[in-house]
Structures are given as structure tokens and as C-alpha cells.
Image (cartoon, rainbow, N blue to C red; front, side, top):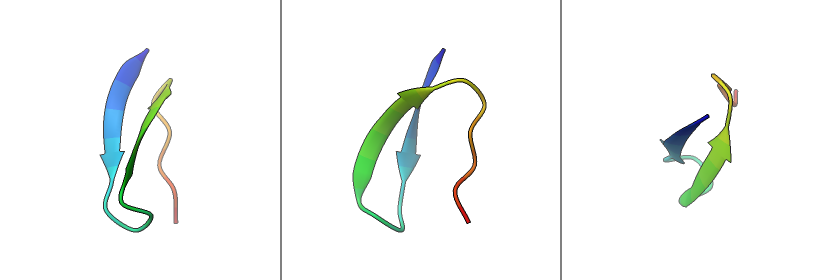
Length: 21
């Protein structure tokens, strides 16, 4: 799992390669 930073929500999400629209 990779910790990706979601700029839309402004929070870090720990998940598999997940891209939020």
C-alpha cells in the first residue's frame, strides 16, 4: 500500500493505487 496525498480533501489516504476524482 502507498500513502497518497489527496489535495482535493487535504488528507492522506493509505490504500492501494487509489485515485480520487
